[in-house]
Image (cartoon, rainbow, N blue to C red; front, side, top):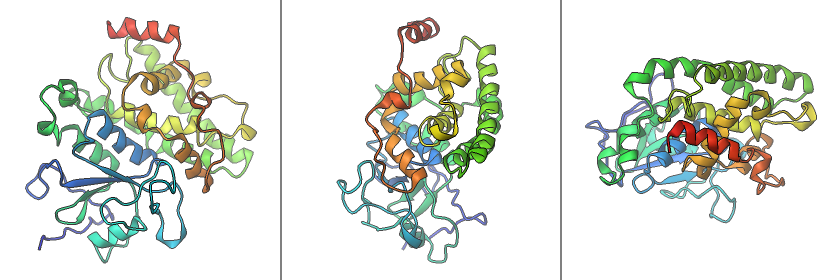
Length: 319
């Protein structure tokens, strides 16, 4: 019987793939996410951009809690578009998996969560650590022809100081402010949280103005952890957290044009980003109910990619 490894004192699991306890394997692990959550979206983006779908299947909880059990799985794929049943155990609630891993667990039932099918326990439920593991843990399993995906590193050594600095601009202040706009009960609460967002946008706008050769936040050619963190935060302000009744209609692109183009570039031009962006789940995650909005109209949330944008991209990409 495998030895179960309980969570750390902070209520989270911090085990690492590629160790003797959890060696990389093409069929051993399973990722649990919620498409509404920016932290889970980070892990899903890393999985998608690295091309790990064949090695790391996922199950997706519904975007709102139901009762004391917390995040719930639909019973069928058709029950709630964008969510899935628990493909491993058919669990009703995500919490059941946490208790399966540790019967005395007293922490939160969060996503993302990386599960080990062999020992039937949580490996890790910290989004930043999961992103970094997925950067390299499965590299040897990727086809040799997938050179770009094999060398893709979201936390490269030469950019770590810059990534760490930009990360402090994003979490927790900016991410928390976006949450607060989404749940703001009054116009004044929305305005207060929005001001924090606009201040952060100005900071990133100035950063990109000082590095006009960049396509990504820290490079002309390399997408990093910083891009994933900021994208998954700001796309939620444009969609789930945006309240027309509280604001004059300005979104990221109007407030910060350079940041807006950076956001559009990721969504429209980087394969794997649009595919993991579920607008309906974001809206429902904030409203706590099934959305009846027009989710099919993508340009409600992300401005279209223009010819001028393409000229900008080609000049910097050298293609």
